Length: 70
Image (cartoon, rainbow, N blue to C red; front, side, top):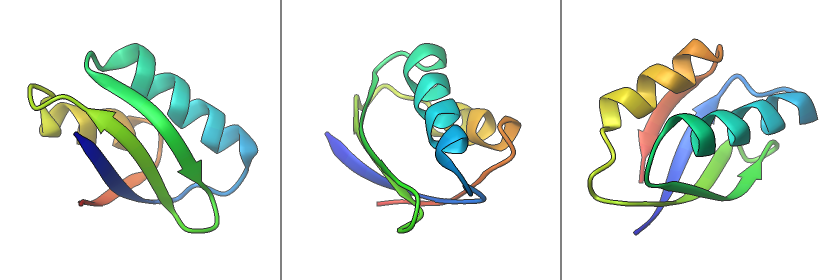
């Protein structure tokens, strides 16, 4: 299922790459489709089994804030 993650705190290409790597390597069932730095969002294919609290925790560990999952 495709989801849009609204994420605050990304400021550069390094942030984008760091986020992509963490999401795909640390969470089973997520495939990153797009990270939009200016729009402050990430589009992912996410299985229903993905733990949303774990997802939020990993994003926050990177120094970003998960505002919403659409």
